[in-house]
Image (cartoon, rainbow, N blue to C red):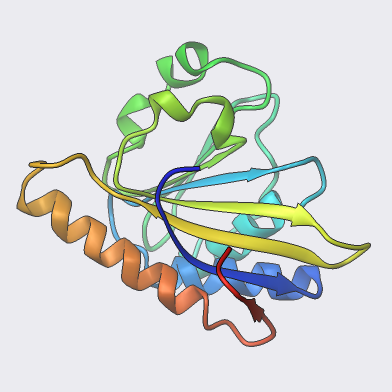
Length: 177
């Protein structure tokens, strides 16, 4: 996986995984994109539930597997994509404008549509390490060179947001691999 690994950590339960998402959501800015990678049940939607709380989104958060994308209003709109079923072309026909828009986009199963995702972006990989234990690896995938000042500023702010999320209480930081 390309990009700079900013942190790796163990989450000892869904509450901690959700808190990581909430801390991230509190500081994300318009145009932010978060790609989530992990097996079924690894905590992707749990992390999105916390992220939504940090964005002050009201209402239940469910994986949009059968609708592919849900937009929910909040402090910043949350555009929640699920790439499990469809390829990138099908998935983003109905939502491309949300990937770099005025809200925050989150793509579950981001590895399935990676070539379609713009940069800069955050990527979080979630791995099973026990019944409740998960390993989270957080990367920043940088913008392409010469993308301009606005993109460089977005990248800087994504880095800061990711560093703050890595300081979530209850995370056990691991050495970078």
